[in-house]
Image (cartoon, rainbow, N blue to C red; front, top):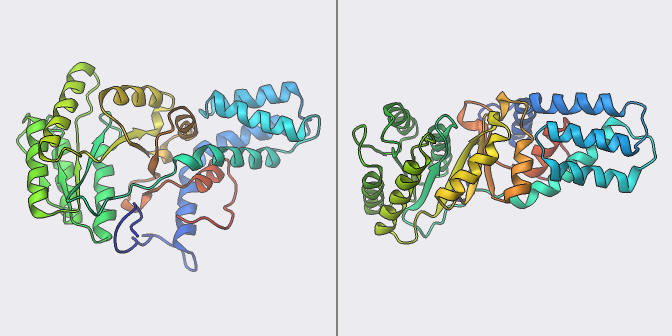
Length: 334
């Protein structure tokens, strides 16, 4: 299985330590990547629960802390309620609160932790990738393409952000790195026409997978919405079942603004799943929990660094334990 759902072999971890399994190596990088978020939480929990009974005031303070850590009101309320049921009126340690928090976050995230599964019956399986400029769309496409190429799939990339020459050039670089053909046009070309041509060419070659990059200019939402709708119509002229996935790439450093981005793109196009990038650059990693609670969209992958191996399938327990600074337990693997 490919690390993103379908393929012939699994991509090795690029930086495993001696005697370390691939999953353990990734968990270490995940913990390091989420260290800004986890240190914010653990320090707050330590300040709140050192030699303190779990009373109403403590629960209220805990909810406030979790909300400021971007986990959202619903998650904060659930954690507080779980602690109130089991430990109210008792002394409770920061570690006990962290364990309860990790368990509750895992319960929230487990239903949305789903890999991007490529349908082998599609030739090609079409993935439209959307998001605001600067969210990491083009880099994410390159990393996903590398994973699928390493898994033995034939992949084509389409440079649908035709108004940004830098985005086209960046995708071409990833095409060279991964050995994937890149279909591009001159700057300012019609994105819908490019999408049509890309799918026609990819289908003719019998590719397994086609990634289509898109523009992300939110300054004029109406224009972008019209452009994305036109692209989808053009794609359906070649394959009425496509696109088969619409991935929204979110930059974790924007925190709660990620909610509005999901709302905007859900209005524009039928988003089927999320990829969260740049978790290593922010203390706002908890926003992923709030997004899962509010929207319930599949989270296919998360990124904690610049290297191709730093974008991996999302796994609920590993993320939850990393977010609250706990060691990994046995069982699940990535």
